[in-house]
Amino acid sequence: MMRKALIGVVTSAAIALVGCVTINVYFPEAAAQKAADQFIGNVLDDSGVAQPAQGSGTATPARPAPGKQPSASLLDLVIPAAQAADAPDIQVRTPQTDAIRERMKARFGGQLKALFDSGAVGFTANGQVAIRDAGSLPLDQRSQANAIVGQENTDRDALYREIARANGHPEWEAQIRKTFADGWVQRSPSGWYYQDAAGAWKRK
Image (cartoon, rainbow, N blue to C red):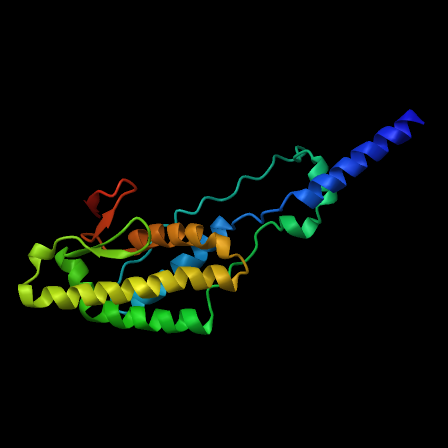
């Protein structure tokens, strides 16, 4: 009798816990890195900025040793298995992102590449671009450079937001932004500038 009562209490507690806790679907980092690398490579390669990837930097998820499966928790028993898919895909192709990609290609194939080559512009740690050395630009070109950087950042913000929305997880935007920020630097040619996590400019 006591055992049945105990089981009933545990079951009720588990149901109450699941009902009160919002289950956060984990961010598919490896899939996001792969998708970001493909998108960035398409933009840079097709616009004439040839820089083959030196490895994606994606770590292969560790797998449990044979015979050593991770123990199941109480939540594992009551949460549907679909919540824990092993390697979900991440969607980066929508009409909006396709249009953004084409605009980025046009900018990199035009003046933005020249601004990066000169060191006047660099990648920021939050996935944007910024004027690094306005003094290296002639006065009559600074206004145009600022306009190009502004257009690029508008598209970048829209890109990260749209990818998060297209995957049904707006809360992933910051992680998608970080993944792309790392990818732009990894894919960029030697000599281009980027900011580290502390905001300091470095040359690749």
